[in-house]
Image (cartoon, rainbow, N blue to C red; front, side, top):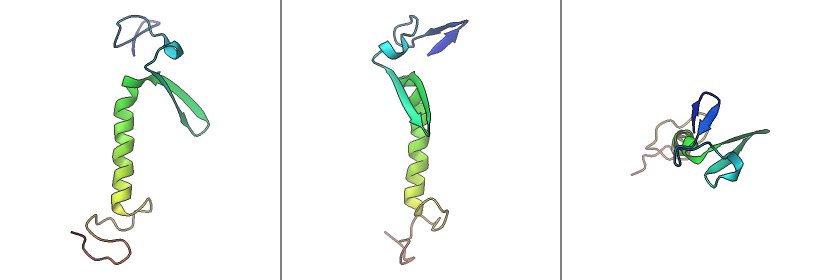
Length: 80
């Protein structure tokens, strides 16, 4: 969604954003906060979130331990 003055333009139709009436409009809940945006606007944010989640999973969790991605967290042996 591109904002020109007070009008928010749809990147697909090049017309005024319909917000909740549009099929592409998506609301995500973050804690107690609900944020609505065009799905195209969410793509870079969700890609970053996915990358962070994958890094945490590969490194053995959220606590920062087992930062070596090539080891088994339980046995500390190299994983091939």
